[in-house]
Amino acid sequence: MQMIIILIVAYNGLTVQRQAEPTMSISSFTQQHALQPYWDLAYAPVQADAIAAALELGLFDALADAHSAAELAAQLSLHAPHTALLLELLWSMQLLERDLGQEASPRYRCSATTLQYYCRSSPAFCGDAWLYRLHAMRHLAPLASEGG
Image (cartoon, rainbow, N blue to C red; front, side, top):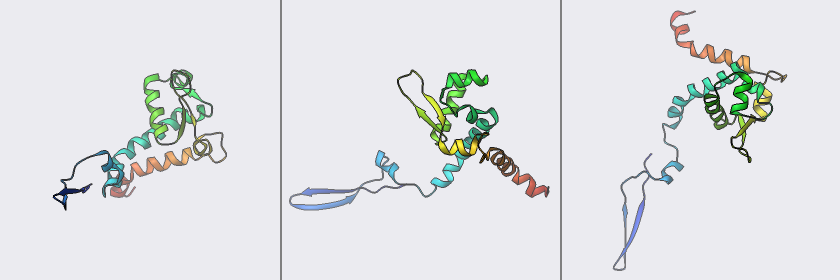
């Protein structure tokens, strides 16, 4: 992304404009680079793996009610620090809500959309269909080349 800054300098009553060299600044991040959609693809497999892990481990079902990472890890026999990282990732993807509250550690619960589509108790559960599509897409290249 190239951001051009116009400097206006008053010199002896004359106004002079010049273009400054492109620099990185906080304001540089307000416009999207033309390649941003492709850079986002680098994160997509990590996000897909997070959803798959949450579905396979039963995280979404357990998070119908709010839990801390430690509580959830204990309930599902998981490693607490890694569970905390996974919960933060799912929260950043807007699949979970996070309550910082007055407690030492945040508490997480499913968003309304997650409750509707990724919790097995919902009549609109789509988790298995999502996992099937993920698996199919990850094996698309071999299928295309082998014709299988």
